[in-house]
Image (tube, rainbow, N blue to C red; front, side, top):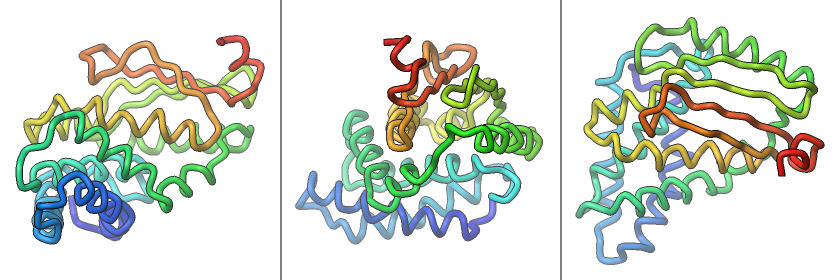
Length: 216
């Protein structure tokens, strides 16, 4: 892939939170040097990854590039961090004000939003046949307060496998739970591709809706 405006924006939005997290956990590290190495590695991972379409053609490009950024920092640390600390780094990134604000501003629980989501899924699926793209099925709910998304292929899984870090995928999946919570939803899933299952089944309903109360 080319290093585009999308990747630049993600770097500026995410790297600060990651640097702050690592600095607090490892005060003796040369964090400035870690950041420089991570930026260089991030650009290299992007360059080495198959193109899955521009952001205007594939909304999931941001997910793939975010995964590349997290892996770049993981590889650039002065010493290897644990998988669990990597997971905490991902959480710190998602909770960064600019990222949290972006997710909180979303409202998928409208008829218009679900129609838009349905069109977006078709567009994203057609953007690329690469294993680095997602293969997605969107199922509208019984009303606007619920819907289901089935991922039969995951670009993050392919990227992590290529970079020899498949064990880290489940920690990057934290993005799903936290982001859904931020836009006022509840995520329930019974299996994931990261576990070696045949798909990730995302059932999402609005907090406090009759579907949420029924499931509880």
